[in-house]
Image (cartoon, rainbow, N blue to C red; front, side, top):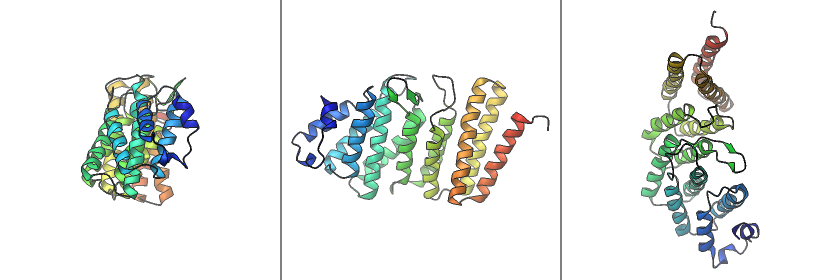
Length: 280
């Protein structure tokens, strides 16, 4: 049984494990298991140790990322199905391999460039935005997708011309429809901020970020004009305001982009006045 085998794995001898390739295939076949212990605690953590601590050959890691890239779009058109676990945890494993390739180059440049593009595409297309699923554990597709995109941005092969596409993907996430008809409740906004931090690390300009933040606020205003004080508006407002607050304090912590922080503070104050002090 795979669970028992992974619980008993001896990493001191795993490189000599004659069935390591077979074990990798079985882990890949079960990467989206609805058993949270098998999927999250055992398979993902085992992949993490094998990849980060370099127990695998370059060929094995290339194979893993190829399988996970295919998994990334399985059932992507579905709002709520168990395939979300396959997509979401494949995204995490791809991120680990990109991280390792950033430290020690082994992936062909063509594969890296395609993976970076797919990281943006995945976050844009994902419709199943559930966080924790009772009985099945973390789906967390938006959070895991954000983790992947942040790693893609950090990679040396990331083309800064893609920065605007990354920002567009993050904006789309803030306004995605949810099966539960509720705002994010599992720190998805915080994980999306990682993407912006990575873009800042790559030198995205204050003007580009300020323009984008104004667009996010304008989109929320458009929703308010269209729906008024609907539940959907309040849920999307919760996503946007929580995201902007988090971004403000991350920038404050980094002592970066003081003008942008002022712009964020102004937008937050404007929204506060609209909602809570409309007569002033």
